[in-house]
Image 1 (spheres, rainbow, N blue to C red):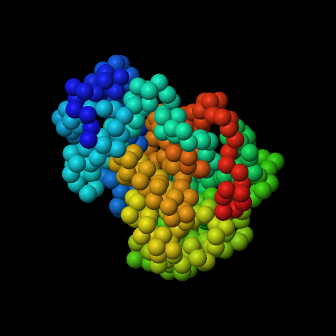
Image 2: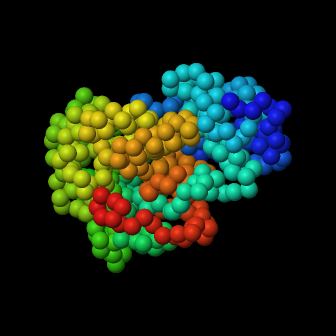
Image 3: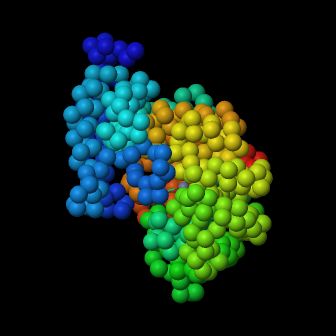
Length: 438
Ligand code: PGA
Ligand code: ZN
């Protein structure tokens, strides 16, 4: 049990929990929480927000109505003030698991809909920041304890589509992974050159329409495969070798255009088409053969377990098959999908679970099964850099943040540049042999 309030020393005793309404990268209200200890240590965190959400994830509490498109968070803020703050004050800030369990019990719903996943995740992350500050350590070091810590391999978006770009492309994310880079700084340098080259190629082709929600270019392509061709050309134009230095990673986000094993694509091959699960898998497997794609996320919809299992088997062990919508940072869902042979890597988004403790449980479940994991941002983000600390502190080997533009994204890449200065491994990335494509 948590110590009774009177016996908790002031360095660790929670003195205040303050909720604040702030704004995210889509200009929508979101929740910030600031925790202070009696000795004056402080921790602060902001809830991110998804747009292409899995049906099983923790639900954000939004006000509805007409103001801000129904996205306001005044009820979530009020819940923190009325229920969460009084329950936390006096407790030991370093007892993360117990405090998270309290948050879950206070909410009392299976989907965190009473107090809101947004209220819970901002509180849970702020508690972790305050605990680290009370110990005088950066969050990554507080989380890592004695375990060795290393920067993760970044997955960075170049073109955005799907729900983040008005459905212009069926696929959501066309990303690059600097598979040949030995260190974080080189991975960012190479990505910056690819991003620049891709923008130039798009502009020259008259197909540049601005940027999508995560900062990737919003291209006016006629079909999805044009994006793959142009991304491969952009890697070459940056003076890099596709597949050797820089490879492609895709988030199909197939739940957005398919259910019940049927997929309605606007631009499957330049025209609208409805595909069966097996036909979509064949289309994707063809891309895996023809382009330097090493990782593919949500290739089939969250309700298509058989399709996901068949695709994972057909893609083979050298392809990373990442599940997001189907497993929603849930240990039990990860176990169920692994048992069915569906996927081999879990996306870890703390706000899908609600608390850091549940996110860590999902990560530990994936590790126990021999799966790899990727810590991920959401399409709605802020200057909050907690996820970088989670990836480093929890020893997760990959990090997905969105593109290489817009400061809510760059804040994360830049935080890695600061953290690397303190790591015993410096800026080194996990060796290529650590990954399926190695
Ligand atoms: P979301 O997109 O944050 O809008 O859910 C990210 C993803 O699907 O990985
Ligand atoms: Zn996804």
